[in-house]
Image 1 (cartoon, rainbow, N blue to C red):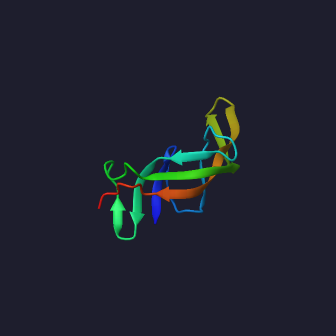
Image 2 (cartoon, one colour; image 1 turned 120 degrees about the vertical axis):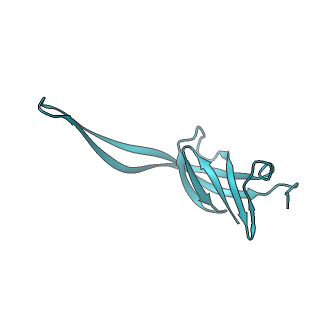
Image 3 (cartoon, one colour; image 1 turned 180 degrees about the horizontal axis):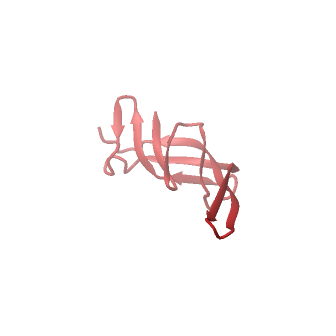
Length: 108
């Protein structure tokens, strides 16, 4: 069984026990977070509509923070001696998926 969650502006495919990097969450290390579910696949059953996903929850524990790769940027305007170099490193929250629950009233 796996689920597709919404993580900021991205969507990620997750299974139980997996560690995933999501956009920064306002949660401390060790806190439990609930992530929004976009789709759930359980064998041959696919739940994707909002009615089917009412009872589905994906919970995880915040493990810590991580930093992505450094991205170097450069901007300039020609013939004016105007140029600028900049760098950026994205910060992520590392979440370990603890449970994917389908809920009691699971539609067939």
